[in-house]
Image (cartoon, rainbow, N blue to C red; front, side):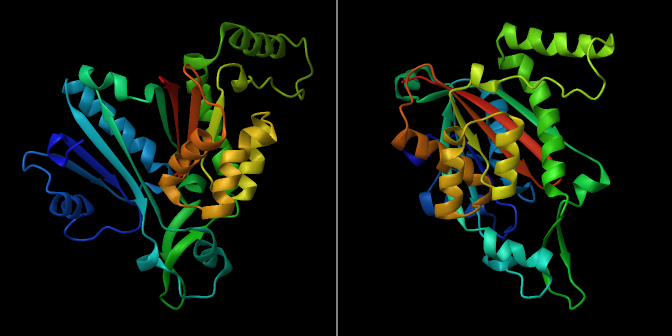
Length: 292
């Protein structure tokens, strides 16, 4: 693909927002055409890649026969924390620079080249004070700027994920799993089961073959594995990326997809679930179907 074939460019980077923008830098370096429509997203956190994909898909839906490129990156050097607060020092040890780019198109002539089709995408934005402060850029008492990670971040992420998957479930789960959820809810309401009995959690493994869970940290991955009843092999892409590359923010789910393609037997028709969390607090999910 030549740069001049691109119709839309979406670049997301949370902590680094220079002037000229990252989009302008890309246009200057790769010599995109002057009619290219660009979108520079900042402050969206680790879930920004799927937010960018959602924006690109909306642009393609409104503009047939087009090509969109999404670039998800994080450049943390300018936001390195030089203070001593433990809650803010964590960003220096966990986060890493990273980047990935994907091309999306609705051109019929490129169907044979496509690897995946976007089946569903669900976005969740939580607005509570606890969620808003879970990942928060601030200054310490000495004036050092950094990102503070709340001790409640695992709880906040769990709540956001529950809301998101409740919306995604009816779109992807087989009827049998949806009926089990309904039966569980009705039984609880009619008093057929104890009020403190655990709620039925549908098995997303019944419709999803591979999982790309944002490599935000070990505690987050442990919680998701337990709550979604996943197996260690389901979490292998996320844990491997976290171990080898750290938390590369929005690009992590693309590193995980690459790991799946290189090390796991993904085939035509298999479905991949990408699940990402970000500041605000956000939880975004996307289901892709393998085409070839």
